[in-house]
Image (cartoon, rainbow, N blue to C red; front, side, top):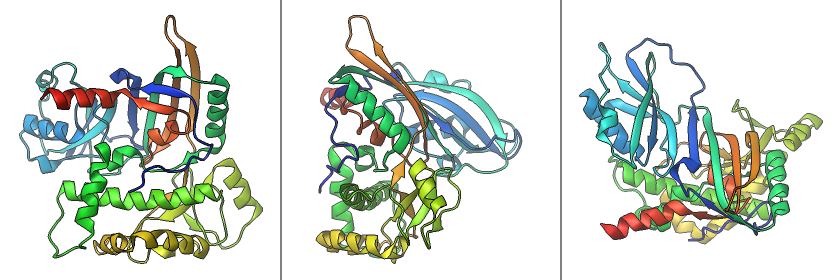
Length: 364
């Protein structure tokens, strides 16, 4: 299955290393609300490095002496990064003593509970506004003028909102397993386990990326057309564009609104205009059996914006002593967007954490 999707601003020529050190990739959740300080749910603001999100949730449950089903989080964060995110523990009564949780882990794996408070509502998957990233790219090789031009283009016009390679698993394993799982279609009504859900998500995301890549090629990925559904950048309610107006064109050009594309579900063509739906149907015909199998899993209708424009983007190129050029870059993205989809328009990325994963695999 193809995973080489088209670039909005042509394929980068410059190269850079990512995640040379864990601290080179810092991501913080933006919750979008302040915990009330009271209620039946304990909220933990946790900083972790080298630790899988789901694994940490289970260790928190163990430390608090509750079922793992009573621990939730808004989103999965990269193990090979420094991440700050919220966990939610359903505990009525006395607050749990989690003072020993930091001692459970040893370098290079670290966990710190930065804040413990309470709230009246459960933290659910996707229950955040977005994420703030602070990244350092090292060993830059290439034309720095090109890099500066790309930074300006991305800041002003954004990038295609592709699902990042993380969604598809190491070496695309989620796609391989997802293809095998989806092709026969769904039989029975048994609840899917977490792994099967990952596989389904990978296949659904792949279809989206395929369609978006085609619209990048024809130049319509960031253009609002009559009949499109438009998504405001601030996350407010999307709306159908019945006719083009100056205000719509103005907001589109500024990056305030972008078209969406439907994710695969029964009736998915209703999630865009007829022109895009027809183009997508022709593209998807090459995988008609896979499409049919995916629809059989009865997804609710959903969509995803075709473009992300990083918010509060700032950067600095550093000429480090005895080292190649470095780039420090900060920006915010809405929930569900991938920082790697921004970086792929800047550089040919060498993810150094992949090397570490290989070392771990071969040493076991």
